[in-house]
Amino acid sequence: MLIDNISLFVLIIEKGSLAAAAREAGLAPTTVSERLAALEAHYGVVLLNRTTRSISLTEEGRALFEGARTVLSEVDELDTRIRTGATTLSGLIRLSAPEDLGRHVISGAIAGFQAEHPLISIDLHLSDGYVDIVGLGIDLAVRFGAISDSSLRVKHVASRKRLLCASPGYLETHAAPRVPADLKDHDCLLMRFGQNIDNTWEFVQGGVTHTVTVSGKLIANDGALVREWALEGRGIALKSEFDCADDIRAGRLVALLPEFEPPNSPLHVLFPPSRAQPRRVRAFADHLIRTIRAVY
Figure 1 (cartoon, one colour):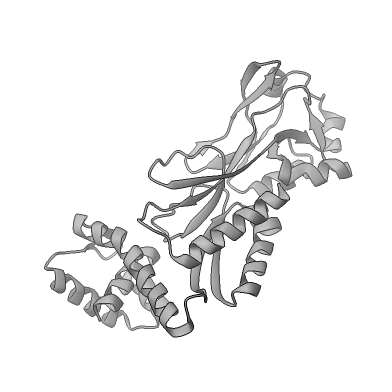
Figure 2 (cartoon, one colour):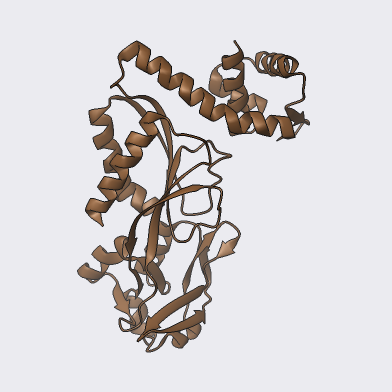
């Protein structure tokens, strides 16, 4: 019962409310409240500050939440090994990935892994913006660019060029930029990452870095949408080679400033700062990295 109540406590935090956790678990809200009260009575502390509109963790609640995932994963893995044998992988893996990469590469990697391990379930969260990996209970995440959260465990996967591009239709009505500074006179399609907008673009020529602050009328936290805007002729985009290479080869987009190269965009797999990952997560991460490197 203690393990069950800890698991329910984690679900409450991940879902953001007792009511949402009750719906997810198929329990009555009063039952969830009673089991949370029993858990708090067991430890003799308050785990959650509750109001009619929100919940927040106390210091004791945060300590339990951060340690609970590791304990629950180990219990789940032990249960699986006893029930199905040491070589069988089963259970849920929560994965976060960028939109385009998720659709074009990671979806196929998931299919291959599940074909080999049919008892594995995948909860895929696609987003190009900031994702609170710990708060959402994500087991692993795939992300482009520099990683600002030093608490996360990071494994480098690959690097890929970024390309400046626009549609032929946009270039029919706007003179193509000849140097990076010309981008100040163009509508640039911007990405948002959390609270930050990627509007400082760098280019390197002959060892010299050119930095330009760009602007535009369209901003999104969805890389696939930024690509669609570029295809529609609504501005100039700075995209990963993976996302736009097919469009450039087909003539739907035109590469700009080829003699000025933006710095490569690194690709990482991120893990929450727990002591150890379940065996299924480690196995899937290895499979995913092999799949991405084969494409890159």
